[in-house]
Length: 161
Image (cartoon, rainbow, N blue to C red):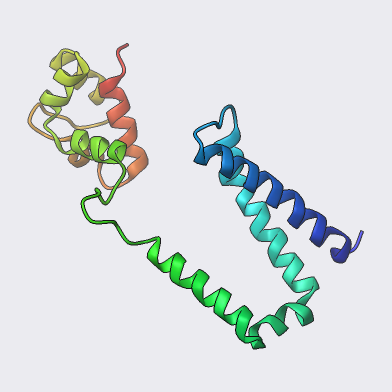
């Protein structure tokens, strides 16, 4: 099969997956692997669109000379840029990230209390996982700058053994 035979079917197929899962997510009707498929198969769509544009480059490039097409592309770029803005009164991060950051920055003693765990048990668990922890230190300082390591430390504190 040539690139030409693959480009359009891949674009159509990946668009269908992204469109359907996106609509389901918008209406909070997604289930199972919908979100995962949406996020990961978006990469397939990017590749498919790139392949499609490469195969049809001559036709594709003509759109950049047409005023109406340029207007649509320009409006799309403005919408993309605006999507990075935070509306007034809305937190800059989703609430679950704000909560995680608050837990990472709070003293371990306080986080242990929130988790309903004994401080000494938490400190022992953290030390067993190679974290140098004390009651008044926080998980961000104990784990260092790597987010994966921070999440590992937070998981140790929050999960009862």
